[in-house]
Image (tube, rainbow, N blue to C red):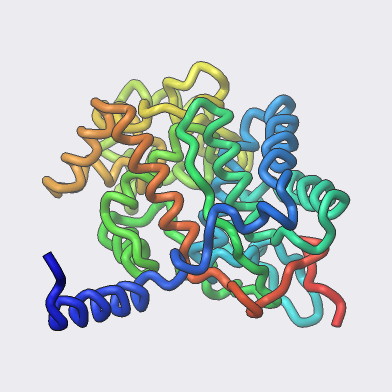
Length: 335
């Protein structure tokens, strides 16, 4: 049956409106380097694999770099820039200071790519590719990474301080921060599931152990047995707050495996960070139902996680002639 003229114009209008709301999806694509640097993903994956052999935390750290980069200024590799006369590095923002790591691995990836195809692959795309490699190499899902991001020539330390969700924030604030960058509640729960691997410093959760919200006692939503374990790892007056605990206490490979145990931990009140446990302990039928779904169905979690990582990677990328392709991820190119 032939379409009517009115139907045709409605279709065109729908496509146009859709493009306004999803411009980055149209600009990024999976074959961006197929001619200019066809071995890009193989190079990234190889170096991530090497790094994971000597540092079980590095996969989680690389995913965290990508996350913190996208939330602060869009997915533009601004988090990788060092201080300079014109730049206040995001590395010194509160969410990243003495906790963001993996920069040396990014440097190695960049050096290898520059040898293979100079001036082609952006640092922002390296973070996206390294995140996928880190998750899939740890037993998690794989996904098609959309590419074509360019690198910023500025950093946004103030934005990093205010836009990146904090481990001690409540669900309402975190939801607002996700919503501000176009991510929904299912994305929030799925992406939080990245805490199924990696470690966290004691200073990010010690308040829950000893003086939760100024009460002088522990967080009542914290499993009592788990509380005792954490108090041994993080004594109230010891180690300067830089001791480490597995984000997933059931992870038997020193925090390396990527699975859905994070969600069953929440159900048994063993979420390490306050922002983790809030997903299950805050009275909210919708978000609790998502946690329960992911706990009972790892495939559903993996599928949602992959979809949410693609969405997150589409937060305000620089494309076309915006930004640049940095030759060194730590500094902008010479004028």
